[in-house]
Image (cartoon, rainbow, N blue to C red; front, side):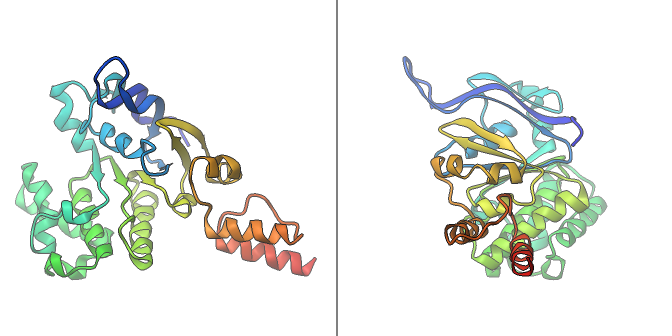
Length: 283
């Protein structure tokens, strides 16, 4: 991918408790970039520091050392706060904490209204956003009647309607059932691949990293590994040391290898596994 950074972390440190002499840092000396149009997945177990990264990315938190910039703007400068949050939106784990209206389309309109967007443009943005997350047919529904997955898609639509350059999603599927997780993940991939939105997906579900352009593993407040999904998934000992559970596809591959079946080491998807089994049977 072309090097065109939208978000830059430059030796960033952050602590929830800055008491000297020894504050406990949630992130330590983090340096990385998110390129425009990229789909970056940040993997890590609970407490690894990945959710802190989400809040640092759009000035909810400010570094205690180092610098975060969004499109060249220092997030620590008070005069940049509004512009930073226009460019980088954050969707959190629990959609109930972000839904503010009782009707779907009213909730999606809330953000653009607060930005002072003209009513006719708000109408267009709301319709486009709901279509992007496949919730347009439910635009008049009451939000409290929606499933968890539907609520999360409405929360994402609300962010899309504000038209940020980047959406950071912090564990957006953690509270959802398998169907809800699948629906939300498909929405996220579509936003990136079809609509060109820069995506940072923060998760502990390894299988959600398969379609990413790049994966970053965070452990003990630091970057433990970085690379393509195929490169990261091949480092199984490191992932397990970081408290990350291998996806079912990788577990099945490991089980088959223990039975003496010689297989590729870089299988990511169910389809690749099926193709490999077919190849072995035909050999």
